Image (cartoon, rainbow, N blue to C red; front, side, top):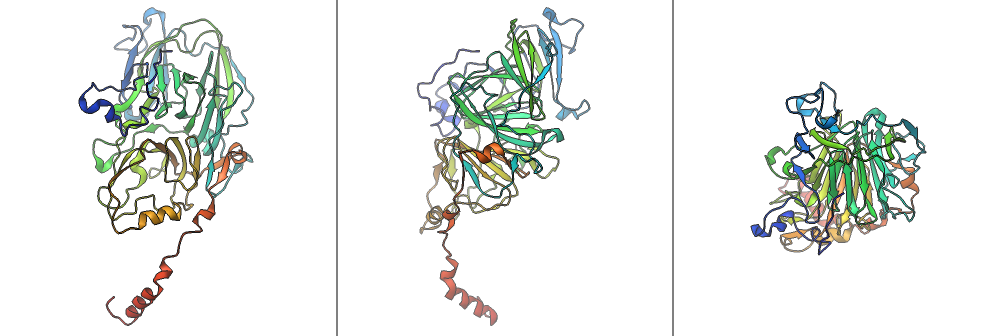
Length: 489
């Protein structure tokens, strides 16, 4: 792994309003990674890349020559159907010391009682509830627990064997993965660290991911997680049968939201050693392991468009209303994943980060609403005022589809009262909250349901919602009487 520097101010990137502040209005050279990130990256969402740790390794004009230079093996990862349209075809060619097939067979591992994959109501280990639920931050274990052992499933929908569905997890880890790698054969992982950075080695090279950044590791790719800052906690969104992509911009045009150029991809970095390794596979929600006598990260060069990537959320370009009313929360979408219903996504990843609030004659907090979507929300750092209960970094808040939610009366009254509009203001300063949203209904796992961290949003908080309409009874009766007489109202 690389040599990782420290920041003079650990909250340096938490305190900025947007990444643009790091450039000091052009007084210093612009840079694409945080100052303590030790690695080099390639930029551009969905591009076809190539990378060589040893120059001259990749064969040009063909993918699989009779002899690859340095005696390497050519191995292709094909992530879509062979005849998928060119624009959606995903693949990568790896040139490595030993192919992935060089292992010693598979052994089934005991089930992790804290994880779940089947969210069908027939499963006795899941729960269906319309109640608005929340969880306080999950504790990091005191016993040695790495990233894989620390996985815990909260909610989801579908089943990975059906090739459509979604699962939401948290992870709590206090130990780096040593001579151990992981492969998710079910779907893609989108990982959101909340506490502590992750130094992730992939077959394509390393990725350094800190709170305020996200990383996507696709189905079938091997990786290991080291903890350079000590214990770490975070959130995971897993999707089955789909892939993350950038949302369409529609009338916004060519730019805005998460720009393609800000997504960063690794550069080749190989590890050729002869020593025992354990590779853990997740398939159909079950865990298996294989052993081998060499590192799985022995890729000297690669090219393709099926590659893990990361994104710094402070680079998100917010858009919003500059006149009146709210725009739908799709304007906060970083990544989306299609479902088989072309009008509704399997998953959206939304963020609520520092931005200006300027609408006039408008109720500015989140309005009371019922959505078709299921919503699972978390807080990376800072505060978020749009929740209806205590909400701290590491917490989770959940609302299933079509269940009403909104703020307490005190916040409503403050926003609706007064003779003049509040001034234009910066909101969510020093904060990033996110939401995993899906068109599918979520069910809750046994682990989350019985967790001591679970609590309900207190319904009594809405008891104080005042019926102001009745205060205007006389005025209303007068209007109705005039209408009944055919008089002008």
